[in-house]
Amino acid sequence: MRAATTVSDGLARRSAHSRAFTQLPRTSLAIALASLMVVGAAERSTAAPDTPGGKPQQTGACSAVGAWVDGRTGAPLEHGALIAGLVQRPVVLLGETHDNAEHHRWQLHTLAALHGRARKLVIGFEMFPRRVQPVLDRWIEGDLTAKAFLKAVDWRRVWGFDPGLYMPLFNFARMHRIPMVALNVDRSLVSRVGAEGWDAVPKDEREGLSDPAPASPAYRRALAEVFLQKQALQAAQAQPGKPATPKPDTPPSDNAIATVLKDPDFKRFVAAQLTWDRAMAEGLAAARRGDSDAVVVGVMGSGHVSYFHGVPHQLDDLGVDGSAVLIPEEAGPACEKLGVDYADALFTVTSGGHAQSGRPRLRLGVIVRSDKSAALVDRVMPDSVAAAATLRKGDRIVRAAGVDIGSSGALIEVISRQAPGTWLPLTVERDGAEIELIAKFPATRKKGS
Image (cartoon, rainbow, N blue to C red; front, side, top):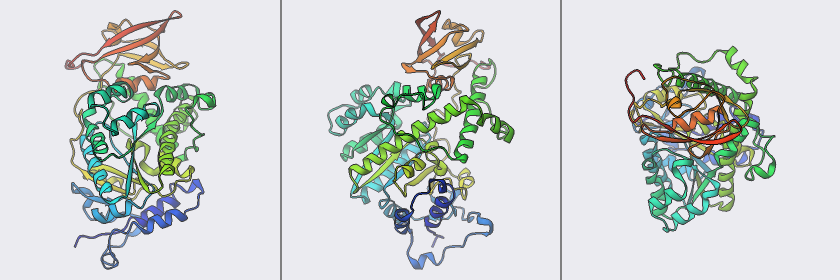
């Protein structure tokens, strides 16, 4: 028999460690944990004890493809018993890397397993802003073709990743008449918060969101690293002949982190991230309140759930205790995610699942900075896509692909979603007037370009 364990000890540990700052009662969590025993008492007696120093067991499960692994101990989890425990949880969060096909296949299989055990299921999606909820309802009722559905939700503008990665999930929900919930808010709100700060946005213009719970120190540090990476990416995108995605040589120094934490731009960046987290948590909490018998599943980027910082923390603040965090990770590297309060359970997948694997990021060829709800062009690189589009120094890019650009980071994100050969419409403020430009990315990249 394979070594087995429970996830209950790991959950209790992360509740006391990563989420202690919430200061919420844990009674409901304790009840939920009791249901997450993955083996019988006789089998549990065979489980190997934790190694000294709190390090995870070296069972090898994290190195094998297709294994459920306890996020704390590294021991394998039995699929059926794990699913049986998960359906007792109020919310189950499924992480993903958006362009990884393996992650979406795992999500589909996990949803099918949960559906087979749960009395009712509700699925919330990061990919949709709240305003398209009526379209999701029509889709579930069978009133729209797939093509009409994607057009009605404005998929290319609001999300932009290959719809083929997500349609199996949407078809599964439709086939079984499982309610789909739009969890997100419009990017224009997030961009505005990123440019002006949360407090600067009037309450009646926040799409009904309540104030987010403050980020923990650990989350702020993690976001500081992301912020520095975005800055490095922006610099790399502007340099001809350099890789568009800089290689992370070493983690940022403590001094670099300390400096970023004081940066007003970073503080607004954190506020924008919390806006996203809060919106999705509120959508999940509302679905739970709407049907307490249902298991509510959230499908979203792993960055919103990992280490229990983002959406799980906001759910705690909203009084929804005991959410479960499941994340797919590549077999082998998954071992590095164990014993650090990364997730309740990991599922190991094969490498090479990225739909866009090996494709360099596209570069516009500008150096920009955030400026009053826009990206201000400080420099246009010669012989670049930006130069061909007639962008100039001093231009303020206010919209790209129909998305309001509230900051330089928002522009980088839109560009990162484009495919080779894309024509990217830009709305630019120049000399007090708005003009429309088209940035045309080449279908293929020349060597060294």
